[in-house]
Image (tube, rainbow, N blue to C red; front, side, top):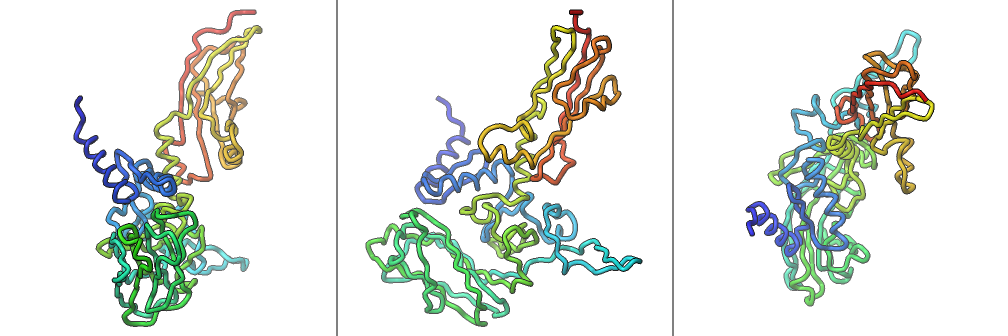
Length: 392
């Protein structure tokens, strides 16, 4: 039996992913860890690469591309998520109309949220009880807050590990029920780091865990105060992301997206919008059009649409989306608009005047998509009625 080289390569990737706990790989073949806890989380992230065709948002990577990434040249023009930017009053100049009421001026270039990454590493190292893993870094002391981010595996209990910064216990505790699986941790401190050198230490407390416990990634980030760095969930701006070579790009939100933090439950709006468009490009909104006659000789044209908007059925979550979506349907006959049939999925035609060329256009809208000029949101079908219904 012939097996292509691409399949062999994917199998090798799968083995590496599962055995080394690398979690997942996107691309033509999406592979994930076999973990019952991390597997579903990682699957969503990797499908973000494969389906949405976006790059990473976490620091220390190399693939920053797609609708969730912007580079310096795109700050003032071509920002992929400009339609989602949160209004920033400080970025606007006040203006007054002739009657004294205020006028909003077009915003200037979106501000960059103030942050820096003084340290980042992917050690992928097994921890040892006799020799703590130690990293040194230097802070400018010019930022108001900081965050220590890291990921671990094989450390099931709080008593198994002590995480210190400059000799002070950071109070790490494992995610409940995580066991020896890998998990990501954020320890936020609302104080500034002193200028100068600092020491970060991971000290394994139980020698029985040697060969099991692993430090996967470590990062230190510093932020300005809330007026300089808006950490509010749902705020869309330009948040710096720092690559493996410490080059800066920008992402839409602080921590809202699972492309930034795999343990988050959702994509950001920029990614979700593109997911909609990518999926809609693969289907036709109009699945069919049926022509029929009833017993009274009335001709009917009935649309079969993808069950979105008011056509949704199913669980409560699906039904809840009805208010966020809509179909706009227009019918024409021989290029003349049939206004009375607007937004109708079935139309009943005059017995004596049904013959002709009919065109139906369907436009889909959802609050999740603001790029309304996309062809994926529109479908058109032409249908020729050649003869009227037989007389009853």
